[in-house]
Length: 439
Image (cartoon, rainbow, N blue to C red):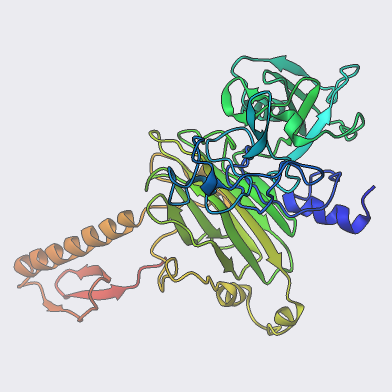
């Protein structure tokens, strides 16, 4: 059994709702289901009595080597670390000892488990590891099973033998024993790049993975794009709230970012004012790490009706600074606190002026926005301002021509861009007064 300290450490790697993780508490080195992003240094097929891996710059007789991929594609290089350059179900490497003509093997890497992947477990079938519902499909993918279980309000989803999906809330899903991850490498029938368990082996996932929206209050967690690890769907509008009371800032890191074009986007908003703090897309990629000096941030994702891609995985960690909090004056207003705290340390995303508060396009109503905030495009305000200004000028000229015998016109000079209000009193005068636009 894990100690309470280690169990807590393992839990917050994924999210606060995840049950205790069995096994060593390791910081994840993979954020994809098949470990295609693994860049660790394990150089044997198993940490215990594993076979040594061959160097990628010495495997010229095989399809994957540095001669064919000289620019580091797939993580290849002058090393012998396990990699997954061909999009297989898990990292692997070439080995020197041939066994029945096999010259490569999968690598058993405990740290290469994406957050939300609970592991590979034995399933005796009587009863099964997850006792909720089950179904089979020749188009099964990890997210297809997760989505089915999530729609039925189950916490866990399990895949077995490439085509079977199990759902349940069993907290003792480990009761039959844990198996090596390489025993769950049967390909999903619906996606041959994803692992879907094995014969008598079920790979388990938390059903929060790939959800379109959610609420996070834990000190650290990983949030995935909708439908992950499948490609995100078209027409997605998703919100995730990240609120950690007492945090002085929240550190963010996009460990995976694959957005198709400039129309699909990820935004970070001030959780209190809904101001857009940063926007990232296929043409404006995020920095590896950045921070926002707030304790409440909203993560927003939008995809159009055309393209799809892998999506994103973003890890956050809240930092609590009691000394900093005590320095805030007691008579300081909440608005002043928020303005002072909004210190977003990205030069590319920083702006001295918030031009608009927008999270949906005109074709997507903003009813799903937290707090039912009504957002409008900036162009609407600018157009209205222009129309009012032109109308005021034309009215001034018209009244000046018609009422020269009625009285005297008095005008006051106004700053460019302000709205004029015209008041006319017959046989007296016409006055034009400035009226400030209220935001």
